[in-house]
Length: 178
Image (cartoon, rainbow, N blue to C red):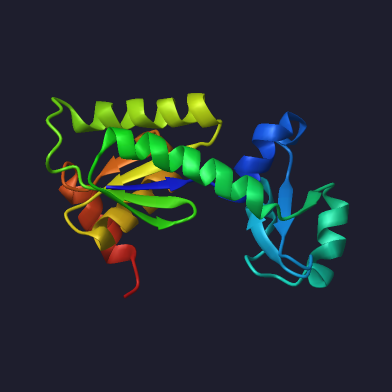
């Protein structure tokens, strides 16, 4: 399985600045030169990841987007908190990046994997304030694609098990460029 924090830098900022919840937000790089994180609201405006700030400034100002400098100490702290919850839930795990972690779900003896993943999502949200999505697959690559489905398909409620929904995964694979 792959647990991925949703809009991680923005989510971290929203934990400590609740006034940003529901508001469009961008987080800028170290020197405030480029967009390194976007809320869903900003993604919907078409602002690309890595966009030079000077090129999107007008759009950002027109839509009253909150603009923040990155705070890597905060992001690291919250990343460690999420990772510790995941480590206690699945002892065999691999931190993949600051906002992603692979879990070995094969050795878990849970009666309903989807319910377990949903409970894990709720626990992380409740304990850290960070929303996550969970993708389950037979390989890391398939778990990554399943996670994308979990993030983008509202009917999944944040969890997609590609081994349980083989037809759904097959359709997604057909839509995915190599």
